[in-house]
Length: 173
Length: 162
Image 1 (tube, rainbow over the protein chains, first blue to last red):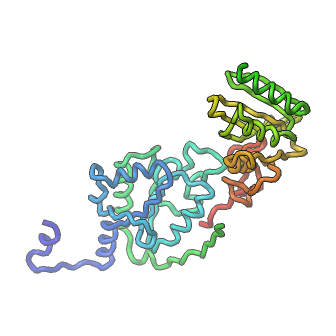
Image 2: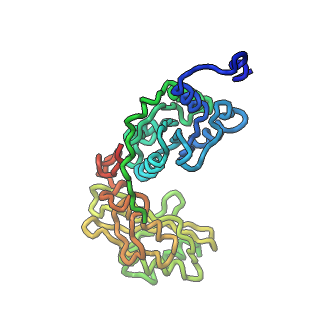
Image 3: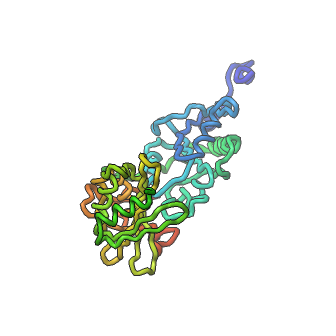
């Protein structure tokens, strides 16, 4: 079973550190639940025992961005909220990924309106878009599996030229 | 005496110069008056012991676009004593886009007037805290006015840098 089966015999195997790091990363994605509206309910459902996001090693929803590497933006992002979303994204340590969950987040959805950002890719680098209004939990899990594939393919050289985000100060009264 | 008659009679007696106009639409009783009288009329309706309109349910406005008096400010008030809803209306023109506040009469109208100001640009004189309530404070337009495009004005609301 598991790792022991691989290690049987000589008790060691040879691989690249890069591959081990990517393997570890992809099986312990910590999501930042950016639940802004109704998609957040489906995101919570994905974490419950029926759909069980823990099967993919992502059950640790951290409510602080400092401990996360995947941001699930679940809900309608207004122009006012966009600054908050970006601020939280900037606080997440690199490397980090973004799932745009639901129609509103991906394209504005049914809110074709002056107050709603018509797709968060206008200010965030989105890795996976999840369709649906709201998407079913299995759809979100599918997105997570695709993110895991993407993370599994990363190597250290992909992160060599990362820049620190510009300080984005918002005046709040 | 029926309540509607009582209201109209009392208002006529107390505010003969208010250009009162009574109408009824789908069982809702409407009172229209000159905007200068908004504060005394509201105060009267709230404090009169036979009426007691204690609850201000909504303050909003209508934009008639090309009409002479462009806006109508609408108040929905409710009397718990009579289980009766009354609609108050006052016309406001664009050239003098202001009306007196009723937040001294009903405290709830404070935020409702701020919303009306935010969406239509109608100023409420003597309001204790007349700021935008939904849109960012530096926003320059009034979204529910007829000339405002559905998708907004590009660049008027700043997005964070990518």
